[in-house]
Image 1 (cartoon, rainbow, N blue to C red):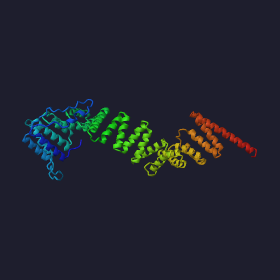
Image 2 (cartoon, rainbow, N blue to C red):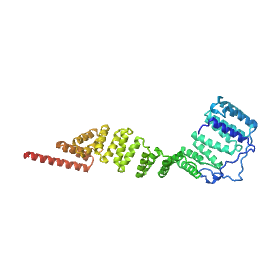
Image 3 (cartoon, helix red, strand yellow):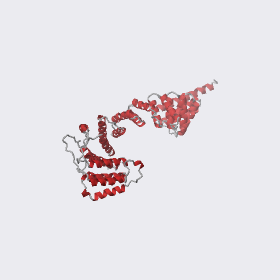
Image 4 (tube, rainbow, N blue to C red):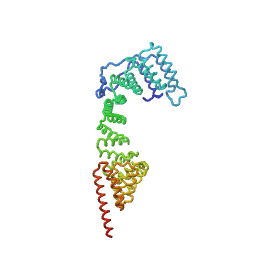
Length: 468
């Protein structure tokens, strides 16, 4: 709850005193009866009373002139320069005001309920604003309520709401909720802010269904009265439905948030939920919109968007987008990031660019997976010497998921370098590795290569023997 500044305090107390000495001795009911029928009712809450023309108005006793002067003395100590507080040279004296008010309570039999209520209200405000003493603040607000029915309905309502806010602040959530139930029981015209407060209380109690009901009621009421629906209302409602795993509602609310309050966090959240729920096209479009709006300013944003472009068969654009992030140093040159960019180039058939990125990634990686992929690229380009080097580095680093594959690639590169003896030994090793992994197809490939090398070696030997 926001602290009350001296100027607001002065205005509030002055108004309080004027109302207390009103000639007719009573306060009218709050306006707004026209809205009585349209307010939602929350589960576990009393119905909202309806104001009728013959409704009995609460009469409160008048404040005497002597009491009024006492309040004036206390008020002057709290706010010595009400007309120009910014240039006031007279020091405030909240302790002096407290002394006056406590002396009045010592003689409380002299005062009626309305006057005592004003004493407790002023003490509560001073203890909260000047002393940061929440326990005493709560005590005096509760004593203020004890003066019902000799205080105005407006003061009772305001005190109930204030007590609810204070208990929410103190994490007394159940007590805060009870005060709001009492508030709804006597209030003819609840507005969106009261439903929001109930939603906040339920939110802190981890009762997300009840929080969602209150927040939705606040939003519906605001919309029906053509009032502004605030961003944080939607954000709280979104979180409540997310906690309940109501992802269709989460998407619905996030679509409102990106429309009315376009921010990076909402676009990223929306894209994430789209992806989680299998709406891949909508996920990509959300990232596209965020990109156009300039919201993708984090490494994770760039790499996620680039990955989505790859998945949606636009690898060249994904590679170029991630490359820009890399060149601008927004994206760190980690093995993982470089590998993803290299894969995008590879899918886009930009082999030379893929090789360049993979070379850097492989040198920084702790395992041989990237060199494994690199060896296959060199094999495709018939660069057998580089293929052999990359495959050997992959095997040296280890950590390869399918080691027999890189062994097969190495054997093929060795064969094409006319290293038949080394190639045969590599294929024999690959056959053993594939057999241990129970990969029959890989084992069959290695056997075919061994047979082919044996036949080729035999053919060459026969040609050499024949002098050819």
